[in-house]
Image (cartoon, rainbow, N blue to C red; front, top):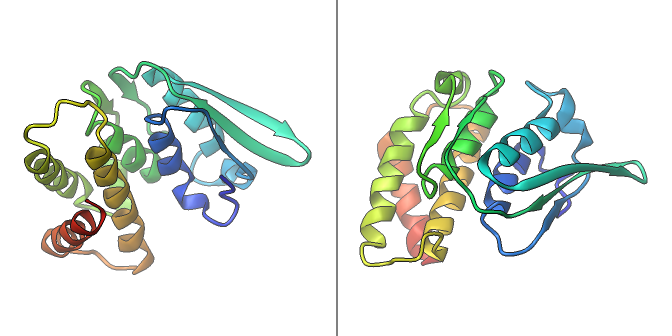
Length: 178
């Protein structure tokens, strides 16, 4: 997946890739090393901490991350005081028990009520999948994607979005996908 034009979404894509069935290569993301944290290294550090096999590959002028899904488990996720790390890895906590985000309030920079909204989405997703026994169901993954993208929509608009607005958007996205 070439993420050169979507650097802000690379962290969320990496977290979602951890739930895949096959290896994922996120390409052309060297430029995210110089943001609030070295996000390329963060992807590798924190996915490995959760039980994935993630590694950086630099070849032909491209910096890529290869993510091989593993048996995911709870972990304390270091945010490096980077709001996107906190938001992206918190999404993994919707499906993996024991994910703890250190310094979650670094999200205040762009999405002050992120964890309130995440809880709302988690509750909604749980209602949808009441009788589903599969741990990483397509519905749950759809919930991850919707919520992750709503975070980016919120920031792109340059405004604080109310929980009610995000709930309406999330409900519509979930209906469309499911």
